[in-house]
Image (cartoon, rainbow, N blue to C red; front, side, top):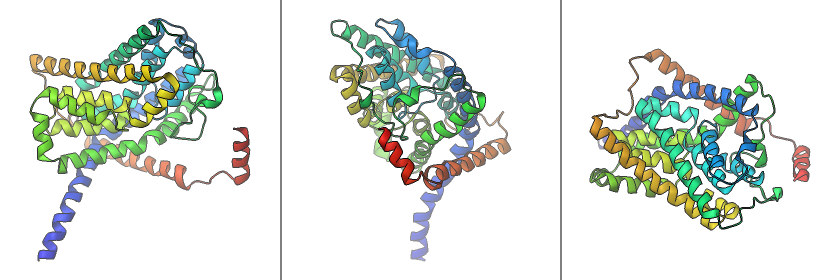
Length: 372
């Protein structure tokens, strides 16, 4: 009997984690798939516009354009780095590059839909707005600090970093084929983008489930002591962590369910996707130490400021944020289940493509190496 009781004590938490993961998957899958569809439209539109040329030159205008352009782009925290460095090498100012680096990974069509499904419509509106403000402030701060220093974009294309999500050189991330068809856009969104985000998205789901089941009472007590302390804790956790916008959303939803304020959750949603230890080293080599300091300080200050404003606004207006299950009234249960099953099935195809599909022959690999 003792053995059965001990086995039950081990199995029960894991069952609870699997159940919580499935619940979040059901709530978010249909919205995430719809977000990928939007990403396909955006990719097709981006390929037909010469937006890269608009980011060249000094001043505030390129910063504003970079922030606006980056908001809907379907790039994860990994793939945005080579894309931003490619823009920098093409002549974009440091301010525009930093603005693009912040606005792009923090919000995308799929992450906004995921926020809507897990945290609610108010946060789905506030998140991209706060991201845009953070990107603009950081870009303008860098532009102001760079006025007395030469801002010359590096020209050595050979030094362009490779994307950690794939083997293509950095420039290819931002060079879209001209006049891309909608089918090409679908392929980009549901293959390239999905493959980039799926691992960290499920890491986020599982981490969120573990928070719901195993979150220490001491951490809950620390978070509940005050909104400013909670925001600083989220900042310390979010800045060094690698987490994409999709992966951070279920974690934030789980923390809200445990008592975290919406403002503190917003700090994590802003700081987590925009920064991580690996990207800081890369940006330092490409933009310089001073630019990286401006980048990090801007994210920290604006994130906490936005979090305080959100908590104040919610308290004054009497709004509440309900994590999970907020949209059952108009999303039928069968559709949520079908979306979750479809997302799991497509995840299996992603795993097959990346790890089990036929690999390039040694001859083609040698030819590729010769090109580099």
